[in-house]
Length: 101
Image 1 (tube, helix red, strand yellow):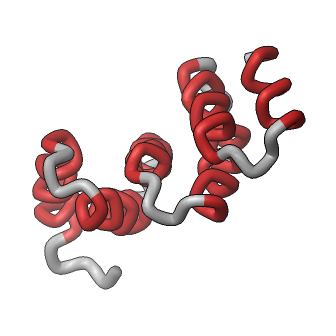
Image 2 (cartoon, rainbow, N blue to C red):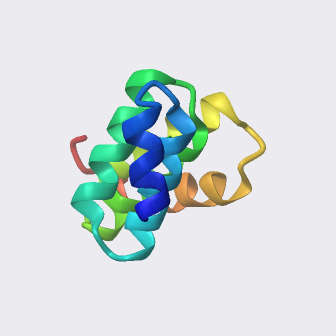
């Protein structure tokens, strides 16, 4: 975490530094901090499918199914070969069927 903290300070426009820190924070269970870093990644690189997938996972863990579905679909639009996202989209669509999004 300290290494990626330093990367984000020294190279604030380097999206992958923010993404790696977001990943570490996610693994530590710091979802709010990880989501903030993912938002920074996406501000720098809106097509970063890893950050989109990470946001989807965090929304899903929080029970924010509609937001998770949107993030997974955005990730798949960038990287249609992300198999885990495809299954998650199918499951969330089924779960949300009949609910207003």
